[in-house]
Length: 63
Ligand SMILES: [Zn+2]
Image (tube, rainbow, N blue to C red; front, side, top):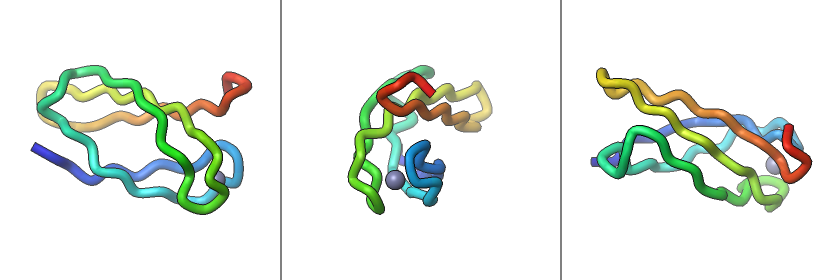
C-alpha cells in the first residue's frame, strides 16, 4: 500500500513528494535525491497505527 508523502529538502528548502510503501514497516529509512537540487536527502519515516506518516529529514552533515 502506497501513500504520498511530502517533505522539505534540507539543502534547498524545496518541497518534494515521494511515494512510500506504508506496508513495508513502521519505521523506514531511505535516501531520496532532491528533485530540485539532486542532493541526497536522508529520510526517516515513522508510521503510527492509524497510518499517519511522520517524516524526518537529514542532510549528509546530520541536520
Ligand atoms: Zn533540494
